[in-house]
Length: 254
Length: 143
Image (cartoon, rainbow over all chains, first blue to last red; front, side, top):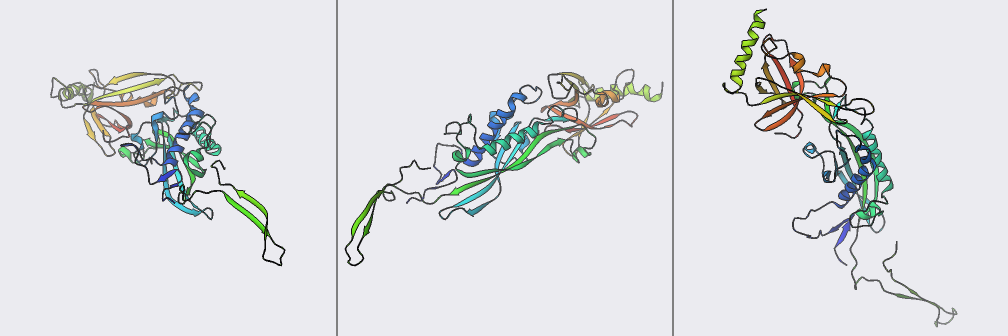
């Protein structure tokens, strides 16, 4: 057996890879790419007809696999942030292996809007974005979306090494508004306010804690001859009444 | 004609000498009050929807800037309007007269470039000066 094994989509030890190549969280990266694709697939045709702000839901360069924290305003918007949030949990899953549960925090922020005179036409934008994320998580795949390294239509759970992923819900905010209470020595009440429509969502993922990796030839399963013998019950003599060969797995099992 | 209105003209000249070349040139930032008008959509004119055109008012002389908490500036003194110059409150704060598809931006152009601000307060109770309190719109700080 080898000590090499996987936790979710991450094989440990992590391979060296190319110089300066990123060390990605496969679950976060895979979910972020899929959600960005889903938002663009569902919303960008409409946004392209609404000049004045971004014409696409998530520009390709604006998918950020880290927590937005308090520095997200420095990144180009609109943007989609995905990051592991909170504390992970080990949960017994089967008699053979356990699973790790993690919460993935999703933050989507659109271009700056001006309240109240710039809200009407995009009032439903965040509801549509949340619906897009909810649908993407519920389906778990799209026939036109090819996860990195997999053909189109591959379930995201399979591509990311997840046992399961569940959408938990979202809330919307008009965030980073200016003027804000206390800023520049004033209350924000009654002012024209500039801010970013945004949603915060969370997704629960299950990742398998794999056991040791079996090696060939020491751990390889081979053919097994199974024989059932019978006797008359009086003597110790037996005669074979059934012989069968049990074949090893060929790798195609589901 | 009152003493106050007679004095506003020379006061504006004195402030210009202090602010700009060929005078003392003590003010290095230009304030532009930009009224941006959007074409809007099927609900009528709306800010940040459609295409926009700008109408600029560049304040002369360059105003004094005083940093305030929160990253903004107290701008002024700005001389009230008289026969020889200055500005009205309505010019400095176009907000009350805006139509649905218009927004106002305050742009300070100085050594670090152009930065956008919003008006959070206008002080117009003094006889010889108006003051503007501006908050920065750029969230990436410092700049």
